[in-house]
Length: 278
Image 1 (cartoon, rainbow, N blue to C red):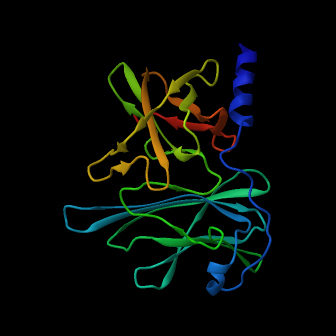
Image 2 (image 1 turned 120 degrees about the vertical axis):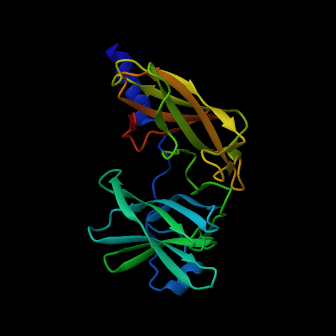
């Protein structure tokens, strides 16, 4: 049994990472005006989401989510989404440090909810450290996203990503809980596809494999549906499985098999871990 556990851990932690390593710094920009003419530096967009829906009050609810990877070039740093407003002016959305991937790179994120604030459309990623400014501006093209109902846009290197917002353990009955998993994949890279989750409820003393199914849309709440595949070729895959009520937590990683190649989202070697809500 120990050999099985070690093999599983090796597969989950050592398989293909969520995305390739960042491209080393080639050039530094110093002014905002140079955004459109510079190429990617030691900062990389992982994924972006800008969603809105109309509330019963007549106001508009906006949800903005961004994940960015930066090279750890210094202790004091600032990472932000620099975006063009509807007025034509540019503004910044600050990101917060989430965790270290290793000694060389970090993940920074934000999840911003607002009422009645304009959406993000065109944007770049801005990274300030050691008195210098680096940009990821999509190789001079800048990034852009849709508001509802498009869902995530992936950076160039991302192939599969767990949507942690809707991957949860839910109450099902007095005897069972439901482990719900939602995954986004870049669907336009091949035709022969399989998406699945390797999970354990007993700290890898045993494990299971759950196949996921593609969804044409996903709407956890009214007005919050997402088209799949979306304009950027991102597909949503989903499934759920019943687990014993005594289970307090599930640890898991996701694999995306396409045209003979395996892509893993194992949370950068940390695996994902979720606990039951009650």
